[in-house]
Amino acid sequence: MKYKYIKTSINNQILEVSINRPKQMNAINPQVSYELKDIFEHYKKSNKLKIAILSGEGGLAFSAGNDLKHTKSESDPVVPFGGITSSYICYKPIIAAIEGYALGGGLEIALSCDILIASKNSTFGFPEPKVGLFAGAGGAAKLAKLISQKQALYLLLTSELISADVAKDIGLISKVVKSGEALNTARKTAKTILENSYLAISATKQIILNEYKVDFDPNEIEKYSEVQKLRESDHFEIGKTAFAKKQKPEWSW
Image 1 (cartoon, rainbow, N blue to C red):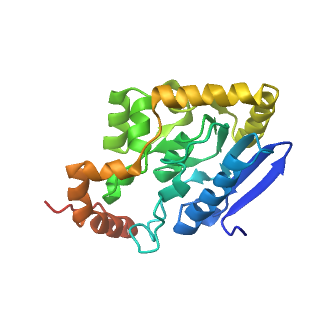
Image 2: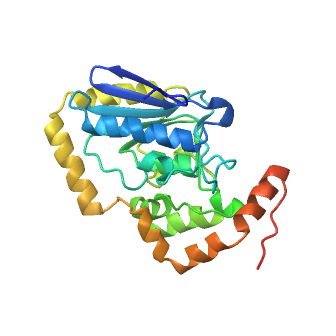
């Protein structure tokens, strides 16, 4: 498959994947999702690839999340974000190298990685409620399992943005490095992991994923009554319009 919105390279059993929409802050549209799904399915099945690194081009954002121009359109993929935030189960390590913003769906993707290395200038948050959406691709469920429930609720309900240092303090990310050094640090970390038994690495990840149940089934979201109310409402259209006009939304009741 020829990729339009991601860049890939392979070096010594390490797959590097970079979201390549820097002018759009690496926002995720349906094509990006399809490309991410394809490359990470290839990574999962490949016997030659042992570690993957995921980053964003441009230095301003890992990913600013869903591209609002495409959200709720007929062209949306069945599985958002390539499925790696929900149904994707792989026992090989994935490292996120984060520079700049990791917001909404971008943060959901980052949280699906095993090790998160972020530069000092990184910013994290779930702004979805500001436009009538929620972190429904696995982000809300995972966040409450990765950090404390109360901290998760605060971030998800207020849409407050936090710095890399705060994210590290609450256990959201693994390591903070100097600005511009996230990818290089991720590469060094990958090489360190490669020195270990890849079978031991896979066994370790399988145990943690199964014992802590950090996977998420997006089909289960249909059972929540409040989710159905939101989806049947006009809140997303209200939020998207207000966002485009740089105004505060006036929610219907």
